[in-house]
Amino acid sequence: MAIDFTFSQEVEDARQMMRQFLHETVKPAFAGLRANKDATREDWSQLVKSLRGKARDAGFWLPHMPQDVGGMGLGVTALAAVSAEAAKVPMGPYIINAQAPDEGNMHTLYHFATDYQREHFLKPLLEGTARSCFSMTEPEVAGSDPTLIQTTAVEDGDDWVINGHKWFTSGAQGADFAIVIAKTDPDADIPQARNSAFIVPTNSPGFEIVRDVETMGGRHNHPEVRYNGVRVPKTHLLGERGGGHKLGQVRLGPARLAHCMRWIGQIEMALEMLIERAQNRFSHGSYLSEKQSIQWMMSDSAMELYAAKLMVLHAAYKIENKMEFKQEVSMAKHHVANTLWRVVDRAMQVHGALGYSTDTPLAGMMQQARWARLADGADEVHQMRIAELLMRAYNEDGSIGQAVGGLPL
Ligand SMILES: Cc1cc2nc3c(=O)[nH]c(=O)nc-3n(C[C@H](O)[C@H](O)[C@H](O)COP(=O)(O)OP(=O)(O)OC[C@H]3O[C@@H](n4cnc5c(N)ncnc54)[C@H](O)[C@@H]3O)c2cc1C
Image (tube, rainbow, N blue to C red; front, side):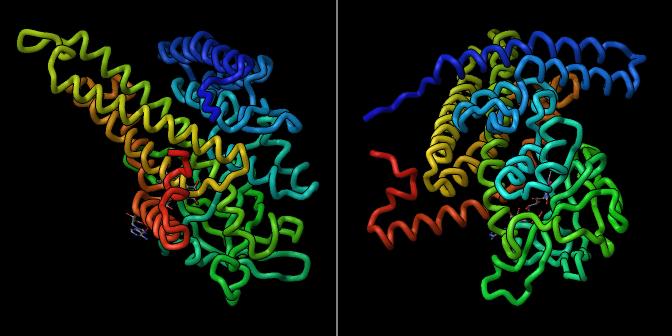
C-alpha cells in the first residue's frame, strides 16, 4: 500500500518560496507602516496594492485555481500546505488573492459560469481588480437550513426580480457583485431544488447595504443587505434553475477545507507563541515550560494539531482524487475549528494579561476562532450530518468503515 506524506519537490519549493516571500517581504512591510503613526488609509491601500503586484510577479497568485485561468495549479493537498503558510501572516491570503469569499466564489464561477459570466465576473476576480461576496444567510430564518430561505427571484420578461433580506454578506462593502441565493421554485418536489443562484452587481438599483453588522470583533464588513426589487438579466442566473443547493454544496466543500487550511496556520502560530512564552516566563521557582500543567497544554495542542493536519490532508486527497468527501470535510471542519478555539485559548492562558491585551495577535485570533465553530456549518449541524452518514453506512454496509474515512485500517 502506498502512503506518501511528502510533496513533490516542486510543491515543497513553492511552499518554501511563498513562506520566504510572506515573512521577508510582506511581514516587514506591514510592520514598517504600522510603526509609522502618520500612515494614512491611502498609504495602507498603496502598500497592499504593491505587495499584491509583487506576489503576482513572483507567481504567488491564485494558489487555489487551475493554471488555465492563471492559477498556480496546485492540487488540493498541496494547496493545504501553501494556504497554511499564507495564514501565518496578516492579510497573507489577500496578498496572494486567495481570501474568502472571493476564493469560494472563484471556484463556483469556474465550475458553473457561462462564457459571458466568466468574462464579466470571474476574470476581474482572477486579476484582482474586483471583489465579490456571497449572500445566502438571512436574519429571519435559520442559516443552517438553506431550504428555509425567504428571498425570492421571480421571472419578469427577460429579467429576474429579486426581493429579500440577507445579513453577514461578508465583504459586501466594496464588492463589485454578489452571488445571491434566492427561492425560484417554491413548489419543487424536493426542498433542495427550490433555490437558485444569481450574480447581482452591487450597483444594481435596489441593492441596499443597510449597515455593517458590528460583531464581537468590531466591524469587519459583514453587512446586512436588502434586495429591493433588484433586476438582473436572465444571463445572470448562475448554474441551473433550482440548482442553488447543489452549487452551495460544490462551493462549500472545498471552501470549508480552505478555511481549515488557514486555521491550521493559526493553530501552529498560537502553539508556537505558547511555547515561546512558556520558555521565557518565570514563576514559583521555574519557567512555565517546566510545569507539567503547561506541558499538558502543549502536548494536548500538539496531538490535536497533528490530527487536524491528517484530517485536512486526507479530505483534500479525497477531493483531489474525485472521491466522495462530504463526511471527511465535515469531520475536518468540526475538528479544526474546535482545535483552533482550544489552542488559542491555551495560548492566551499562558500569556496571562498579555494574552488578553491586544499587544499580541491572540485576542484577534480568538474572535476569529469563535465564529469558526458556527459559520460554514455550525458544529451541531456537522455532527448531525456525520451521525447520519455513520448510521447509513452501518445500516447499508453492515460496517461504519466508509463513514470514518474509508481507510484501510
Ligand atoms: C464571521 C461570519 C461570516 C459569515 N459570512 C457569511 C457570508 O459571507 N455569506 C453568508 O451567506 N453567510 C455568512 N455567514 C453566516 C453563516 O453562514 C451562518 O451564521 C451559519 O450558516 C448559521 O446560520 P445562523 O447564524 O442563522 O444560525 P442558526 O441556523 O440559527 O443556528 C444557530 C445555532 O443553532 C444550532 N443549530 C442549528 N441547526 C441545528 C440542528 N439541526 N441541530 C442542532 N443544533 C442546530 C447551532 O448551535 C447553531 O450554531 C457568516 C457568519 C459569520 C459569523
